[in-house]
Length: 81
Image (cartoon, rainbow, N blue to C red; front, side, top):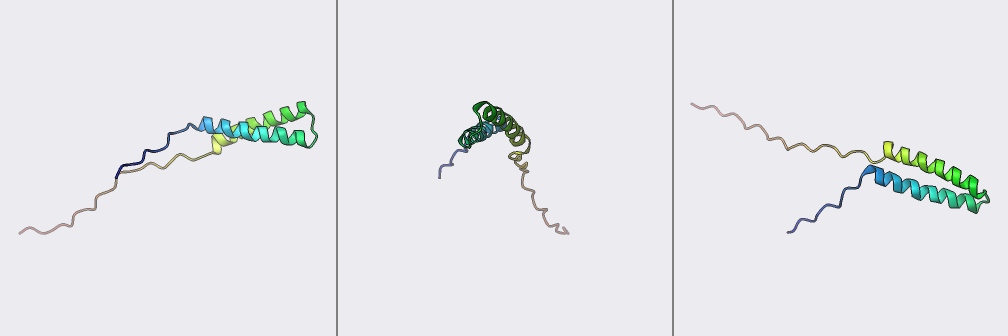
């Protein structure tokens, strides 16, 4: 049975940046939709995107636990006569 390859590893900085850009754009266009001026919406969205980037970078996905080799069970001792 062939082994399926694992998906590629993506750095935390890349995922943090993507979250920040996506949510920053959501905040920007949402602010425009409710009538905030373009300049104010951009500044607010940029500050929010920076805060989101830092938050996801620091508190995002935890590092996977270290995998240790399985321990062998001790062999039962037998008396030799």
